[in-house]
Length: 361
Image (cartoon, rainbow, N blue to C red):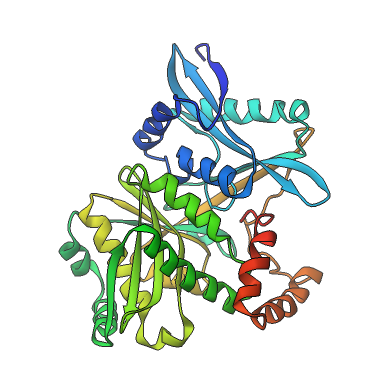
């Protein structure tokens, strides 16, 4: 391999502009690899972050974003990347990617870090026979027009979208503080219903601030008689997009807001030239997987890896569904969730982010 030069880059360094251009140009680049994600992690949760950059002859040939994530009563570890499905090295070839990962592992001891977690993905179209119980991304190729997209759907799916509209639901691409507020109201209520701690409002304010600055995001709101009953947050990166968060209010689910939400998102993506839509993480074969598959999405297995401070590899979640074989954690989880569901919204929105900052999924 020709000589490589390495350097760590801070979130505020001017070279992040060139680095983001590198990410957008890569076919495997994602919105999570953009500097905006690292800046949001640091701004909202105060976790230090940086990016390891590889250059050859002064030209960027690879990058590895890293966030130092604290753990209660323990040392911080490096995660690439927290609070999302994807991270890991992004490079012009597999050899540069592996050298970046090795370089990061070598730096663990000097940094006093407890370990390294890389969240990568295998290509779509993997043999589905080996995906049972595994976590996958669901990827959909998009045509160049919303009309062509609608025509590609099976008749039953088109009928479900029209049903949502006949039920009096409307959708809009929204912007600004009011859109973030509408989104957070739907999101936080849905998280309480699911028994899960939500991200802080400050997290979404940071995501909005950093991604909207370059036009790399939009929010879709679904309404019924003016009330926000569904919301989705989309991040874009060149001709690719991902939806990290989507929620609906359970009382309105009989009206099919989810169907209108995902149609509105996909049709908007077609209009702005996006050609690949990532529906996000699911467990192969389970409910959310089937929902995404009906739109035509295909699975791409997640390939998450972890190393301890000595560089020894360890199994990493969520390659398989957590709790699939029982155990103390899976037995306790229903009790914790049912208790959370009974708490007032103000309490879950206050307490939840204090817990959520330690949950890097």
